[in-house]
Amino acid sequence: MKRPIRTLFYGLTHEHAEGKFASLRRMPDEFEIVGVVDDRPRVSKYYVDVQLEPKGCPVVSEEEAFAIPGIEAVFVETTNSDLMRVASECAARGIPMHCDKPCGCAMEPYRSIVETCREKGIPMQIGYMYRANPAVRFAWRAVREGWLGDVVFIEADMNHDYGKAGYADYISSFTGGILYNLGCHLVDLVAPLLDGLPVRVTADIGDAPGDPAGSRTRGAAFLQWPTADVLIRTSSRAPGGLPCRRLRIDGTNGTIDLCPIERFDGENLKLRMTLAKPVNGYASGCHVIDFGAQTDRYAGQLMEFAQIIRGEIPNDPASYDRDIRVHQIHLMMSSDRKV
Image 1 (tube, rainbow, N blue to C red):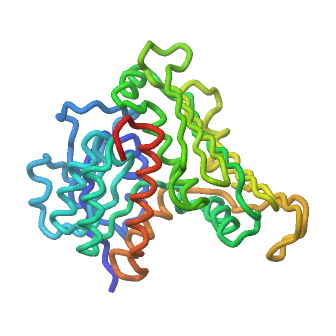
Image 2 (cartoon, rainbow, N blue to C red; image 1 turned 45 degrees about the vertical axis):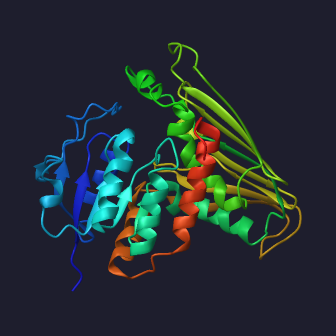
């Protein structure tokens, strides 16, 4: 009989911790939260608009965390600056982990963590929640199977307007600012659409209007592949930014436009695809693909994680190379470190 996976939820301070925790609580047949690590005493900077209060779960210190018997999975949801420290410990202990993003301001220790997981066969799922988004998966498939022809241009946008007191100070703690903090999601959207690494990257990181000097709350990057260009944009001062987040892919036979990328307002998630020539049962012209209403931002990815741990679906060995490549591209546009 299937039983829930004994899960350690490590951290209360990541921006995604509250939502991730809520999703896990809605999946009691898959995950049993046996401990929650309160990492707030650490001095690393973090920004959480709504404090997570894990009622009904045992709260432990960092020193007590891995002494809990029978841990089968760890959700690493501590501050961005501490993610890799905890991930390294999980890898060394051989415990499957869901680790939030971004994965550090350099390739190390992230590359070594991934290689340890590869050697030991440890599932390591990075918290790129769009990977389970049905519209994003449709777009990836359309490009992979050549429906759009050759990709020539991609635009990816992840603006918002929820930065309150303390947000600018938090974002300024990263060399790449908001392009580092949010841009990794956009790189993860783009990477499956193009091969290899960009041949040239130009990035501009500055302060959004109204934010103090040095805030780094706006950023854009132009990434060039041999046959395609990519524009990535992030800003913390874009009214209505959340419902305007976009992935647009232009190819020689068609275009896909996904805006918003996700929605949880009760309306159906839709994607628009325009084709010059018919392909795979779609006629030439415009098509609106309806994916229905979304109800949980994280559940799809978390269910995959549970299935991998149980051996119900394979732990894809190609995922390790993919994650390293995403981080390489991410650093090329948001870090002054050599990748």
